[in-house]
Image (cartoon, rainbow, N blue to C red; front, side):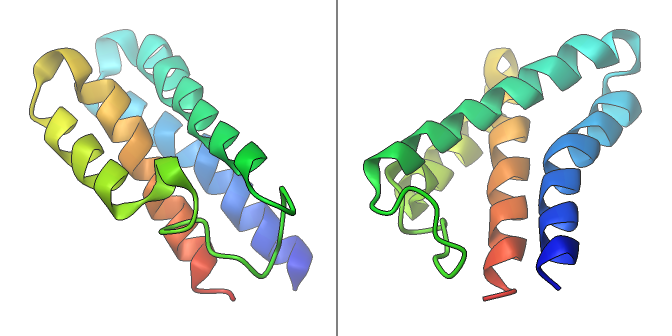
Length: 104
């Protein structure tokens, strides 16, 4: 069961942004995908937690960059064209982490 959870979680972190980039940013899909992958740096906030990784902990609402306030900022950034791809990457990341919370 843990292997399925791991596969779905990390599959969504990599494949879902690629699909969104390919569908909505066809002309520059690789650039859009790499920008969305770069938003995974938001997980650096896990380094502030002890233990750093806990399979029984939901990231949403726990880590600073996964807080509801941060998610609200990512949502606002979506409406600023210059930051739209970054915002999409961050929101997809939060959605994936939220789905992972459902397994707990």
